[in-house]
Length: 375
Image 1 (cartoon, rainbow, N blue to C red):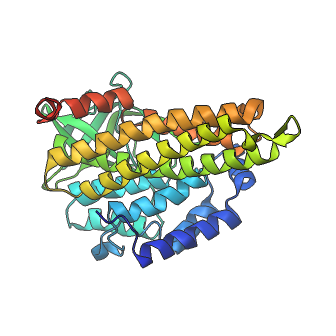
Image 2: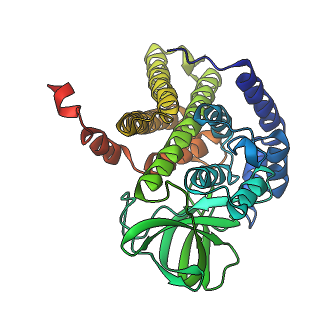
Image 3: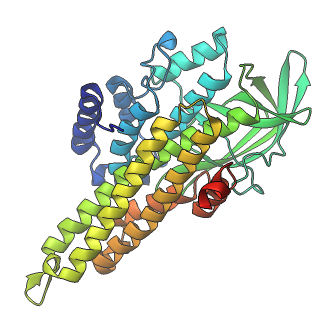
């Protein structure tokens, strides 16, 4: 299978990398993290001008109709720069609207605003007790007049406080449905906080909060899993960018750190360790690229298999490369003064978002054909 990017995809990646190298360096990123908001409106506007916000939006709503492979190109560059803007959450929200929305004016208008960078989105996947179970949902929806009211709590909603609209799974008459809730809706409590990787997350509490139900053909439990798989593919792509940056930072550091009068990069044992780091990264890259391609498959089990395999391989690589990078950096590897520490933290959070290694191993093993293939 040919995994080479098209000329357009490579040019897009190059343009984004030039912007991030020039405007979103490590010190600039750290300055954004330290602000009260934790994100930058200026950089978000620049992302919109570059076409990032329009990339995943359908053409009918003013976007470029980019697929998972197109998004892979973008997420790798964002991961390399450890970007803290709410791009992942918005892209996943756009996919939720694309899969579960309709062509009516409200869904279309929201997608158009997202394409222009005027509206940020977030999907509230999890609840406090659920761990990685997408379908462990206690949030309920009740009909009120021509609309609905939600009651319940969603936890660790990435960039929840920065979003203008949330996509919220809830139970309606016992079945899972998806709802859109505006940030300024009544009877909503938002608790915003910074996570260990410098990103933002929030706890959302709804108490008879007005909501609008998504009424597309795919707007139930299967759609929720589909949306989560999209989020996993994007996270894996972001992790590949972070792994590349961490490998590069480690090699460069070992060229400058001296022991016994020579750079430690000359020591064969350390060279072997850095080669192993690269091998882990390349294996994770291959699995991620395959997952991006298979995401669009009509075979649901094929999609699940590829996505979970990628998440497992990326999680394993994140832990191995991160630990080796910290050791090769010495004490500097765990300080806030070097990018390596922040890359490792981000990789650790990615590994535990939407299912860790153990969760996706179990999901993979439960798919049809696993026992037969093993035999």
